[in-house]
Length: 507
Image (tube, rainbow, N blue to C red):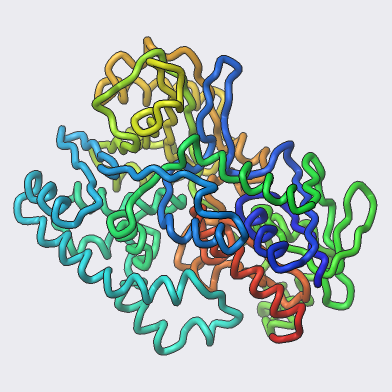
């Protein structure tokens, strides 16, 4: 069996460790932070307030639980609470659209607010019920070593049917006429840090999955997941070295043979990288990428200039976030656990953000209020709240001043639109900005890895076996198939499959 180093203990690294040790491989983990989990962690305050720091919405629960079970953790290890209604979307017009899991009930709600539009939703669900299983098998459950594999006749036909040549917003526009409905069924690209008008139409699988499989939350918080995984790994004897940064990867004769830590080289049969992928280049030997280009048959540009497709700067980061964590001395029984508050024009607001790199004059934002489903999430009669405001991934802005003013503005807006008495009730508040994200190792200050652009999706995204280097693999939000906790877990599963295949000589 192989001896494997895992660099990073985010959900991808922890998942890979579970799967590898389950099959008898020896694993050692290295984590630069003081705790495991990466983006999936808790923000805590000494007064007893605790809330998820990163992801809060659980999509594709069966994928998550199936992979945990495959890694040796029973499904009962994690308690998932179903959110129904799924969430509410608040528009400036005064309309509030409630999202439901059931197709008939959702169509009725749409018809109530937007007469004549309910049939468009039912057509969307019917179309996607046929396309989603094929899309999942082709784009989520397998990796690609070549463009020829990816652009097979079958995949091309499927991409056309999924409208990959359109943006998500444009693809959704085939089903809805009203701008508010187009917003409500394309804002899901914000879950992975992409603009609806830039994210490929293949991501229609996201709004479909919400209704087909539901939206869930983890009882006790998503931050419990890495803690559960780490405890299981420790019980299997897996060393997890926190506050330990890997300085470089050792590559000899086209094979990754270990890691350098604290000036010491440690040999391994293979290495799985679970940091934010664009940073892996800095750990590899100088000159390696020219060899990679040669091995891949990528020629230099005219005039002898090196091709720039491989260096880190060629990746586009996802959007950033201003996150507000708050403890409040009251509860809002009329609230939903997940709520979206949209500006007059979501499209215009996001063009300001994604095209001009500006904090929008009128921001959209998401609110997570876990006590609605999990009474133990806050002290009796109190709340913990999480506000996510999409902002440019520009870490060098003066976030210290921008963040405070923007947070005040959003909290006042939330108070007027759904949380009466909010500002006076807040007893604890903490902010997290793109500058904080960059300090913690998130590429470019983006909160979701590299952006879900067409040029960074499918075969164009870093793969679980990213280079021709033997013994080097990758998992994480920036690696195919993409972001979102269950999808990252699926990517880790693909990386483990590649590792085992290569180590056994069955490529």
